Length: 327
Ligand SMILES: Nc1ncnc2c1ncn2[C@@H]1O[C@H](COP(=O)(O)OP(=O)(O)OP(=O)(O)O)[C@@H](O)[C@H]1O
Image 1 (tube, protein in one colour):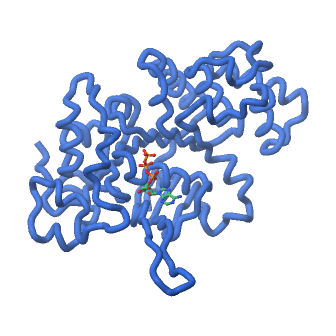
Image 2 (cartoon, protein in one colour):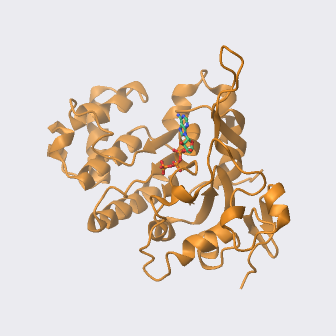
Image 3 (cartoon, helix red, strand yellow):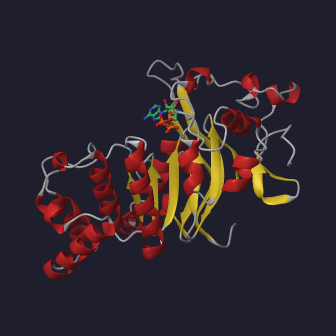
């Protein structure tokens, strides 16, 4: 257990499907997230990277309570989210908020920005009219939007403005942790920087902690204190951002970085790279990366490597039998 942790995840898993049909045959199962353990410390930004289909969104949805784990524990601020689900969910859901990838699609097109932002102020915080009006002004100011915009509809905004409203909506609930799920990947590069700057400022101003999910290594590198790398539902490496991205230990992280050389790491984890991922309905035994791994040996084909501290680096862990050396 990490004493400074705001969020502690222990062996979390999520299986979709499975079980038996009426006729007794097995239904196919996908292990979207498997045996994932890590903590997020108060005030940090943890970047989570991985190819499409590696389980990033499923993990995020479980943390925010939109999906239930089929195994393991998720402890937020000392409280077990899985055990408490259904009891004090309102308070818990208020404290963990989610910002979606597609800003326009995530806002109800029939509601004004005022109605969208007021909903959490009424239902989660119970503020009266005067307090709501004051808070609405603060929220618009926090994301650099003029108060006149409150009476407009989502389609009247550009992608960057809509994402700022998505951020203001998350902020409205007065959260401690915000999960940013690909928050800038739908935006033009010039607008991405604006939104990232706003997020950076809000973190200090409101004492926030972020989980920042992305397949864009350059973005993750610029925002993260620590970086977690996922592959095929599992966490394969985690550590300080600078260390993981400059001296990766796991061959998968190595491969990602080779395809995106610094500086200005523009290359992304390929959106269609999941064609190279194993079949989720028929996972291979052992390390799921072994078929793509230049360092693989026999043990990798039969045993799943545990996530272990790398020698000399207590805060840097990787799940590999043959990790790269620290330089
Ligand atoms: N509701 C579901 N039913 C069945 N399988 C699912 C469901 N949700 C996700 N999966 C599967 O779980 C795996 C992980 O999906 P997930 O969306 O979490 O990955 P991701 O890394 O967020 O991908 P992306 O970046 O494309 O959103 C995939 O194989 C996906 O097909």
